[in-house]
Amino acid sequence: MLRTLIQINSNPSPKDYYPARVALSYMRLGDNEQALVWLDKAYDARSGLNFIKVNPTWDSIRSNPRFSDLLHRMGLPQ
Image: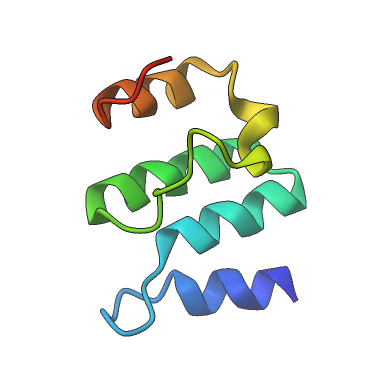
């Protein structure tokens, strides 16, 4: 099911492209590296990161320097 969501939401067509959902799916699969890649894509697309600072979904990668860098780029306090 998660692989299907990844395939659908990573489609580059503007109608289907939702990189934050792809990142979330990778988190649920336990693939933190791909989740971080897709969080960067969500940042670039300015899509779906509204609650990234407080959403417990991202707790397992909060200590990752790449996650901290993303928050910094978004102008959010660490």
